[in-house]
Length: 501
Image 1: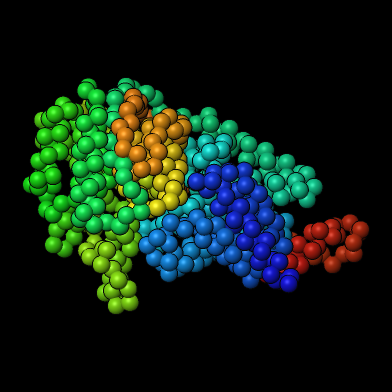
Image 2: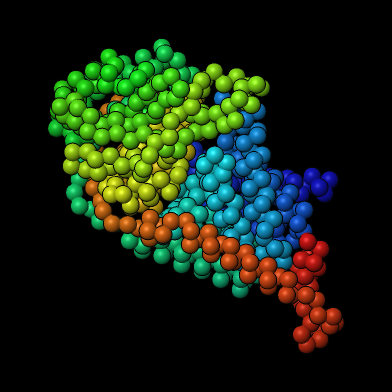
């Protein structure tokens, strides 16, 4: 029963973290979950810390990645185990005892950094940073990115856990540190506005939860052609979602390509369309920009592919044990930063899955992006979970880069997001609608875009190393309690735990 209670506590910590994720968004609960996790790691040996990390990670990810069930229940379970293992590693490197408070935020950074980088380029979905999109801690992203938000969640968790235990000095110190970092994030430079332009987002609408098929693709295309007739004259940019034009070969050589060229001329505007071009051995997922004369002015081909969605790792092996007919060929990998030069504006582009990668947004902004376009397609998901997570990720990218984000989805959520991460306007799921607005063109770099993740990861590793050195050096002195130099009962207990680990 004791072991079951222990597992239940660890699982509760993970579920509290999940409750802070969109679509729920109860961000303070992430601090409660982090406080429970911090307290558990303080008193556990190595095996216990690994178990706690794994169970907490599974508690976060089983609900947080539930959108995967629609495509592969076994894949969902496997992904949760792999991603949960990173949480186990992050908890394992935190030493027990009093110095766990110093190391705990670093352990969370290690776990989140690994999740965002491996395997197959990482899966940074349902992250600790995304739990804070609706709260003040998200402002830290402008200063040092999503890993810094995860670290501040850890610091806040330590503060709450220590204060509940009436360890006033470390609790107040941790709370003051978290507050100072948030204030620094709010005060960080976020660039400057140099102009604006009018944009119209076309959302064709329709049923959700449909699998990709030629018939569904034709309906989607026709719905967006129909909705585009609502675009008012004089708009500078019209944005279509990802994968609305699905053709074989080069898009402008197709019937659909001819029709969207005619639409660009009719609207007398720059029209950016989401295109999938199929070839014999590969396909290309791209955003193609057409000028007011219908000619192609620029394009960006997606660089961050979705594993098992746009390519099959170890295809020959997987094909022998699973049906991969939905992905008969792999997506080609684009080149360079996601930047397209439009009439009057240089726009960074994050196609669908790429919106979850902060480094890609940073690359686009450093290359000259004055605004971020996020065409996506989450129409195959029947619930609001994935659209909500994508919208949260887009808001984080806005905060981190100081750029407005224009998100377009065929069945929602489409949104206009300010450079401070606020949603200025958005659509409902399934509606056919044209969302219009004026968007800032901005220049200048935030501290995070300048530095990237490197300094924070280095700082996390340094904190972990220092905590371990201090833990190992703090051994029982052999003096009796009450003698000068003797450890306190609490410190002696922590030392025993450290030695056992």
